[in-house]
Amino acid sequence: MASPDATLLVDGYNVIGIWKPLALRRDRQHLEAARDALIGELASYSAFQGYQTRIIFDAHLRRESSGNAEVITETLEAYYTEYGETADSHIELFCAQARSQSHISRVIVATSDRAQQLTVTGYGAEWMSAHQLIQEIKAATLQMHQAQRAKQKRNARFLSHSLDPAAKVQLEKWRYGID
Image (cartoon, rainbow, N blue to C red; front, side, top):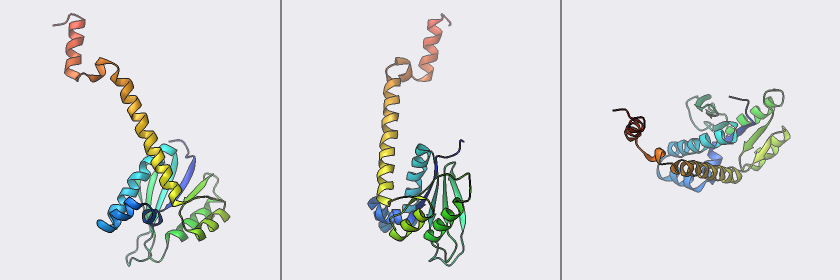
């Protein structure tokens, strides 16, 4: 894969708390269901935008240690912080380290935490609110669906695209006079 246009860091629980369907899922089902739904949304969005995305989930309230990244797709990983570490502190450290790494040219942080916004922009990262990220995900999803429908519509113009494979084989045989 070519180098990503940007590295997107997402404060997972911040976005879940603001995105109403995910907040409802968290409240009605379980936090894990909301996390999985957000990860699913970000997988498509990251690939569509060409971003290398890391979604960070706090573990500061958990007793067991985590501090590991789970690779979801080529463009997305979920990171669970160590016990006692917040998503904010992980994001801040990443932004501070990114300043000195030449292979990371652009860092975008998605959170609605005002203090976090000020800190990460101080490190040279870009900031987008959780609301803005949600709107961008929705817009990208709509664009992907429209492109898929247009492709299906183009392919539907030809009879051969709507035939099953066995019928295509039989027609080819008749066309060339094969028994």
